[in-house]
Amino acid sequence: MTGAGTTSPWGGGRDTQRDTAWHRPSSPASTIGPWLPEGELGAALAAGLGRVEDALTTAVSSENAFVNEAAGHLMAAGGKRFRPMLALLAAQLGDPDAVGVVEAAVVCELTHLATLYHDDVMDEASVRRGAPSANSRWGNSVAILTGDFLFARASDLLADLGPEAVRVQAQTFERLVTGQLRETVGAQPGEDPVAHYLAVLADKTGSLVATSARFGASFAGADAELVTALTAFGEEVGVAFQLSDDLLDIVSTDGASGKSPGTDLREGVATLPVLFALAGDDPAEARLRELVSGPVVDDTAHAEALDLLRGSASLARATAVTEGYADRARARLAAVPDGPVREALSALCTYVVTRTS
Image (cartoon, one colour):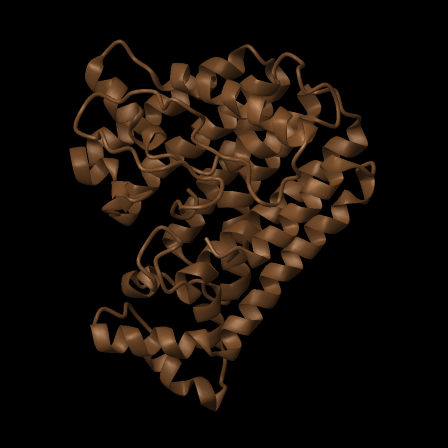
């Protein structure tokens, strides 16, 4: 229930052994991003990610060979591990080795992975993270059931984390589903499409990123003020990250977003720049509005629409909105003590709006 995966400084490489039973990568699927400092903090996070990756491997494994392969399919394809990374970073503000920190990070990543299986069914996607999607490989029923399997494994881990964690996860899952439902039915009559879109992103992406930061800080024993600030930070930086994915789909010229440039246009997905164009009356964007009023499948029209979008005022407005979310996230860090963790979180805000992959 988030945007398509990308190949990024956080992401692992593509697994080349997809026709054999899934196997555990020899190293963590995520790498430390350029927004993180070197030194002790980076080393601590790398070690934590190794523990998360080991726990994820266990969580997606099954004695049934087919379930093992299907559940490990997206795990083997790599990923940014953005959510567990944020949980581990937030935990540095307390005791990062406390019981529950790694397990909570794994719960968030399992939940994210599960939603990707379901998302691809709903979107009829054929590719995820540069590899065939589970639904295109095995069919919709298998993809849905595999997502359910991962949700079950996440719930099993949650049971050991206490009733409050179960409640927080349930509330997060409610928002994930609500966001997907709102996206599916679309903006209602009289509802601002832009406000609707941003609310959907807050539910579908921001909520789980927020919970990742919340879990990391709370299980590490950080004080309540920090937990509250980091939860709000996570939601805002999560929305900014998804918006930047949408922008990369337009401005990328080499498929750096993990999909061919302009995929959203071809599929008729109205992301923020397109919504701004459709809602506007700028004569300079009249041709753009005509082109993006529906899916742009013709190659010539697609190339024209992409070119017009890249130079449009609507793209500039969407970029400004993305920067606004990142700025608000950075402002939440006033509650975080000065030091490497705060610097890393601030650098993340900058990275989200300047990344090229």
